[in-house]
Amino acid sequence: MKAVAIAYSGGVDSTFLLKVAHDVLGKDILAITASSATYPRRELKNVKQFTRSRGIKHVIIYPEQTEIDEFSKNPTNRCYYCKKELCSKIQQRASEEKINYILDGSNAEDKTDYRPGEKALKEFGVLSPLKEVGLTKREIKELSRKMNLDIWDKPAFACLASRFPYGTKITKSRLKMIEKAEEVIHELGVKQFRVRFHNEIARIEVLKDDFRTVLDHSDDIAKKFKQLGFKYITLDIQGYRRGSLNEGLQK
Image (cartoon, rainbow, N blue to C red; front, side):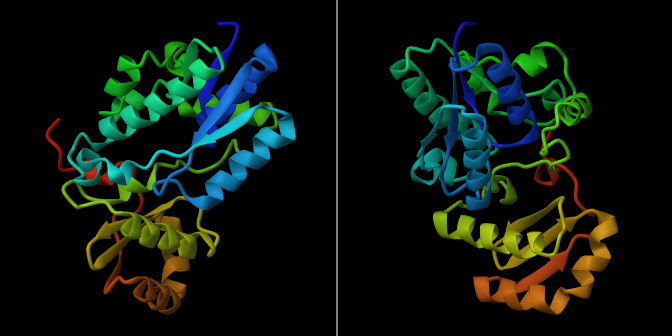
């Protein structure tokens, strides 16, 4: 491909892809990270540190999905409108750098969940090398470990918009509530979790092994969540599971 622009979120998949592309193409790669209300500040800090430490050219773009009516209304194909906005801005920046190829870190397992954003990737010609060669998440983590990438065991991450049930309006203030609520859980040392937004209810999903940690700090969690604007705070007894808000969708 000679030169590529990589949509870089800081997750295990995009970090692995970025590392390999840098090994192969050197200075002819551009990492592009989208910073918006759906993207936690701590993630932005981490991606800047990674690219700086390896001398990778890195730019930040600033889309604001909440200003897109189709996105903020949160329909079941919300991710399509988000990805369309991101791809448009990434393509524009790649063109300015005279880069013809845009890559993302989708892997071979990403087709198993409901992913309307894939339509936008296809429309903009975004390529997914990890998916093309059939690499699974487990394989990517193992290869990342062998390459001494310290994010190899980083928990799965999805944008903050995924915390809202379809049909629940997404706003900057609500995204900020979720980001701050998840910081509370993160500070307890819990790695894999989500805080789901149900208007006045916050539903906490953690792995069942972490139930005790949450319960031991329940008073403090409740106090801080109520300060953020939640009225009721619940612990989901089913525990963390990927894409739990897709469970009611017709397949």
